[in-house]
Length: 254
Ligand code: PEP
Image 1 (cartoon, rainbow, N blue to C red):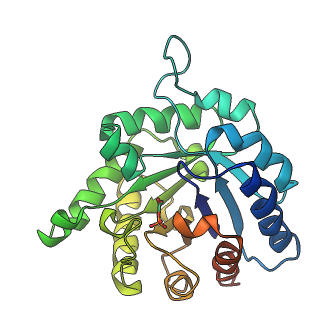
Image 2 (cartoon, rainbow, N blue to C red; image 1 turned 135 degrees about the vertical axis):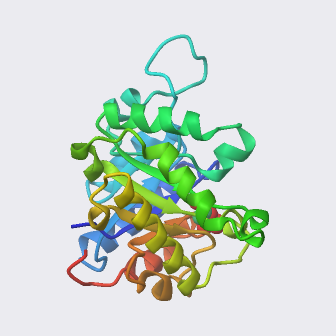
């Protein structure tokens, strides 16, 4: 059975102050049973130990990126093995900002997926089309090809550690969100692709990301194939993020 998840991607934001104020507030909401699913925080890697400590075991923690290599002379890179060794549960891979600003291709994303899975992490793979691709009518084919490329060599027993995050590039940080209906249609299409490449498609969590806020989260999370959200800007406010976490519907999918 797939899990409902809300994940916060802090990107290159945050501070020790945010770690010691926001994380306990989110942990308290989870501990009190107000959240019908799992909550994951992706802080900048330097803050991972602090977030793990402040989370008190209530939250899962991940890195925003891992190296495509296992170890060696790659100055500045952080490996998936190190992320697991320091207590991370998750790795975020293929975020559109990594693809856009760091030149990550589908092939590099696939190598990172492999590193994360080999290290025992859950990998959250981001896919999504640009506005030009959507306007050209190519959104579904672009996303399908990103899913296939990233996940082609996942083995049967690894699917339980794969989460897909559909994040239309035009919706990230722009205040524009896909309608719940459009997002649902893409999520259903992603699930079909997952089935076609051999995944137990109904068991893989598929999250929506792109300007999710407290006011639009309930409608998005109510859709049949949307299992939660990957949250950027709104994950930096404890009040907003806790409210989004509380929007996960309580049903037997939690
Ligand atoms: C993201 O960066 O993954 C994201 C969804 O950002 P935002 O919520 O700010 O659009």
